[in-house]
Length: 78
Image (cartoon, rainbow, N blue to C red):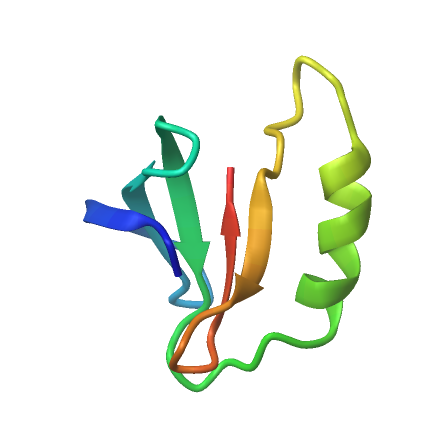
């Protein structure tokens, strides 16, 4: 994963973790959501990523990248 982790922002109801991050390729600060350990990148998480990435609306956070980390957990960058 190309992002520099700058610390945890918070945790979601399923123990997914949101981090402050920096994208060195695009020179942009971003938020990075990583699935909790033991949660696989499957189901609704995978299905929602392409649709969310195509949305453009002032009230919807844009998705810049999604993938699977080295440890197998899914992530999205917003």
